[in-house]
Image 1 (cartoon, one colour):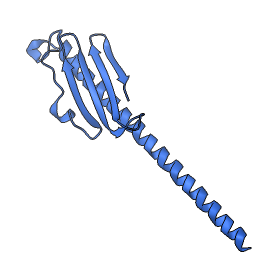
Image 2 (cartoon, rainbow, N blue to C red):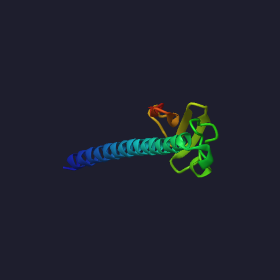
Image 3 (cartoon, rainbow, N blue to C red):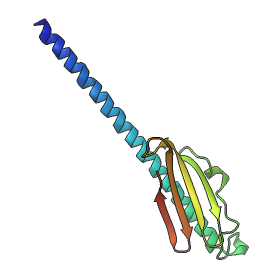
Image 4 (cartoon, rainbow, N blue to C red):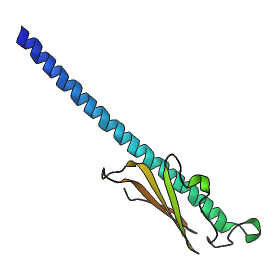
Length: 127
């Protein structure tokens, strides 16, 4: 009877260990996807701000058909979801968002880019 109980304890410990491992992987996957979604959402919001600048007249503080003069507002450059930067050109804005959770490759943080122009916003997931 003692060996059967020992076997049950060992099997129980193995099962609990596998459950903890699976739970850890599920939670890390959730954190990665949630952070990526936050970065994408923030980039989309920033893209809309850039398009508003593009469409507004100079007298209203806009660019009158140009993105020159637009910059990410300082409160949106470094947030809980990540760090955001821009490269402004006359006809487009290149936005970059770096999350604070390791991405798909498991080594570097999440990275998403967005290209904003008069035709819309194109989001590209890098990691």
